[in-house]
Amino acid sequence: MAEHADLISEMSYLEKLNTEERLKLARKRRSQQLKKWSQREKDLTYMNKRKRPDGNQNDTVKVKNNNNNNNNKNGYKVHFVSSVMLLEAATRNDIYEVRRLLMLGVSPDSTNEDGLTALHQCCIDNCEEMMRLLIEFRANVNAKDSEQWTPLHAAATCGHLNLIKLLIENNADLLAVNADGNMPYDICEDEQTLDYIEAEMAKRGITQELIDQIRVKTENQMLFDMKELVQNRCDINLKDEQGATPVWKK
Image 1: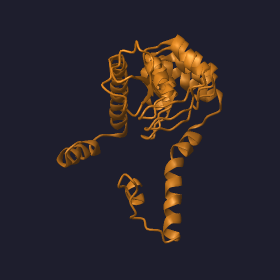
Image 2: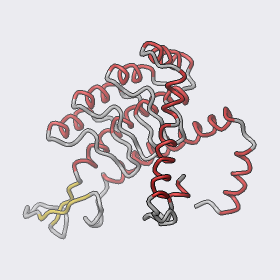
Image 3: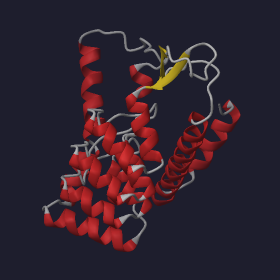
């Protein structure tokens, strides 16, 4: 966790940046987060192939095995939860395994602890075949992770035009707003990809006025909620499970 002094220093630095510079910094940091997550998933894939010392992990189920040929001296074998298996298979772009799990009824919208789905993953890794498979099984193209990023946000920041076309063809929300207040076109640096996104927005009659309205929709809702709390004489200093109050969140 960052030290208090570091946070104060960073706040001072951010205050000196203009809007464009802040946007570039936010885009860079999120891109780094996505890359770190992708690498972490690949590392977990490797670790999952190694023998586990026990079966008490949150993402596993331990079942009795009566087979005398079982290599586990405790007579147990570890079975991973199907949703975890799906995400792991998507991380290594195993089309066959993902299809098998989907046909068994595993949700294509299974998420990891950061809210990322298999569709987010293939947008990061530029796996068009995987995306087509997930969409075939009705994956939510507008699924949001913990930072409110949709697959379209991920594909846009990575500049994967082929995936962006496929997402938009399947009703991806061009005006989805992430936690930083950015829409997919805001975080797209590739000129050709940006031109395509903006052309699709124009084709749908999306105006700057509409963009501005949607961008502040969340803030307006938060303001409305705060007014209701005050009018109903609720304790606005009440902390949630993370220790945050409504005033702090606002």
